[in-house]
Image (cartoon, rainbow, N blue to C red):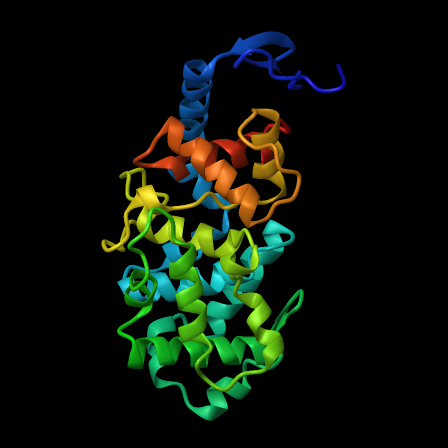
Amino acid sequence: MKNSKEILPIFKNHIHIFIDSKHVKLNQTELKEFLDAKALQYNCPDFIESDPIQIPHLFSKKEDIEIAGFLTATIAWGNRKSIINNAKRMMVFMDHSPYDFVLNHQEQDLEALLPFVHRTFNGIDFITFIKGLQHVYKNHQGLENVFSKENGNQFLQMAIHHFKTVFFEIVHLQRTQKHVSDPLKNSAAKRINMYLRWMVRNDNTGVDFGIWKNISPSQLSCPLDVHSGNVARKLGLLTRKQNDAKALMELDLNLRKLDSKDPVKYDFALFGLGVFEGF
């Protein structure tokens, strides 16, 4: 075997895997136990040190946490060190007071953001996001309220779509819209779902914040990316090849079979297995 952790085809509802070069056959109960253990392993304060979630952890005020988290999640693609460094730069641009900056910035404060760039997210996008956030807080009672408006469903696709609609009610360039994914256009919306996990889950481990009370953890979707998608396929939780909205629905339904109240705790397991263990 080329890898110490490899997957053989699924036979009769069992998953055949190799862990530390040992052949292991798991049924659904054993798969749940395996993933529960991995979620517990990675869902701990040590996880924060190497993850972009460390940026909102710099703050204690609810609005600072949710704004810092939203902006960090927005640029959370590519090299993790680069994501963290550029998110820190964002906080510096806002004088480490994101909520105050969003509400009370002057035009010259926005002009200072123009040099910012993270991959395809540039200074113009940054300025637009600050204006969008100001609109959300001044006219729609804040981020939690907007995301909560369309959450009367088992899933949050409509809530994310509603947020994007409200967020871009301001004057903006069309290109900036690409930085907020829309599940209704078949996007897995990885970064928004990760952000919602940060804000909604509250399991007292100190990683996720749990500061939003109007959305249930049972409604959350797994942040589906290359790492979590590949691991999910190897574990028989996902068959669709593309990481799109249809794949996310398949993964969501399977994770809910393992834990209907907190399905997205398994994000820690899938991500940890993929990134840290090369599963």
